[in-house]
Amino acid sequence: MKTQRFYIHSILTILLAFSFITAGAQFIALARKIKSSHTQNAAISVVVLDAKTSKVYRAMTDTVTTAPKIKMTGRDDAKKAVSFTTGTAQVKMKVDSLDRALCQITVSATDSVQPSTKTMELTVNAIQGVCKKLGIKCSVEVK
Image (tube, rainbow, N blue to C red; front, side):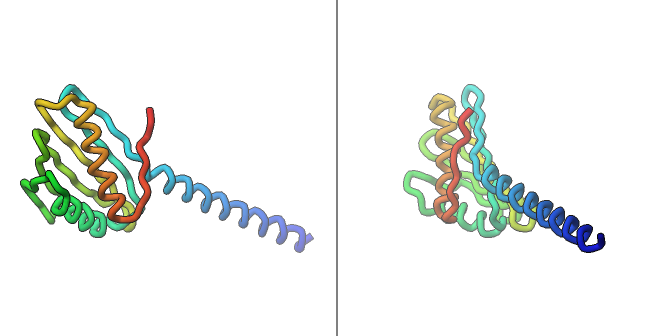
């Protein structure tokens, strides 16, 4: 009787542990989807990454400072934010810590000349540049 109870308890523990492992893996897979929205002449894109905030911010600043056709207009290391212009667009990028090794990148862009679809494309490309620099594969969420 005790042996049977032990085996049942062991199996339930293993199944419970396995469900947590697979749930975590699903969260990470979902976390790398770039989500975007826009208004008439502004766009915002967001992605959650399983990476440390400091590492992502470093990759973000490196990407902005080395990219052609981009002029950095501001940098706030304390807030982990940068702003830049490209063409007629004004762009702001910020990385926020969600957990020890989980962060969120938010990119917003406004442009009075370009249509919102081009502005949204710019915000997505900015995130993809950072993801590429980090070696993290990010995909765009299709609505």
